[in-house]
Amino acid sequence: MEEDKLLIKSCCADFYRSDIVRLLLGDVLHPGGLELTRHLGEAIALGEADMVLDIACGRGASAIHLATTFGCHVTGLDFSCENLATAVKQAESAGVSCRTAFMVGDGERLPFEDGKYDAVISECSLCIFPDKEIAAGEMARVLVPGGRIGITDMALEGDLPADMQTLLSWVACVGGAASVEEYLSLFDRVGLTNFHVEDNSQALKAMVAEVRRKLLGVEVAAGLGTLGSSDVDLTGAKELLKRASRLVDDGVVGYTLITAEKSRSPVTEEYG
Ligand SMILES: C[S@@+](CC[C@H](N)C(=O)[O-])C[C@H]1O[C@@H](n2cnc3c(N)ncnc32)[C@H](O)[C@@H]1O
Image (cartoon, rainbow, N blue to C red):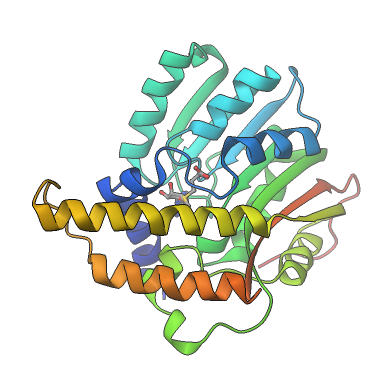
């Protein structure tokens, strides 16, 4: 079981640092782009005095954007060293090295003391954590009482077909997604309160359409031999995207924004 979880985390880290993902998504690895990140920052009222943690920060685009836009200090944590190396370089170029820090680590085992952060964000990532109860508990643990949390994530409105419950589908953020109700119940169990939920499924629709369009370009480049060697199965990726696109159109998979606060009174039950 522990090995299965490690396999998922490593596959995700490998996938999101790959050249093909860079080609298809660039440095912003979530629907809605930095516009939605800014909206998330506003929704949790970020300000200059805030110490913020971005869990599964990818290539650091959101951490840099939040530090630049709101003047806060942001620590980005990710499982992939390569993504973090890019994040450090990008933060230097953006002139926010003094307000950002990047660390390798596991979102299910945060290397920070209790109550260190005023705010925690995580974008399109809770869906890929194998143990969401532990991940949510860790998010809450590192927040100060009254601290704010903001996530944007894939949300299911029904059951996924069996053939979408594969490792690739999990890595692509679909297979491990939960419903909004499940996310809220999870947050409630770890001592979060004052929930606010917004539907952002249009952003997911736009992203899927854009990635499908770019994938066609990649296919053409691969056919012409102008694409460097890639071990990604383009046919499999195209099929997965086609299926995902149908699920998004049918409303089975959506994208949600959820904010909450850490309760000021202690949680009575242990999570996990
Ligand atoms: C869909 S990407 C989102 C990245 C970033 N939040 C963004 O929106 O640009 C998922 C990220 O989660 C990271 N990841 C996967 N499992 C993780 C874990 N257990 N702990 C920390 N990061 C993890 C991957 O390396 C990848 O960068």
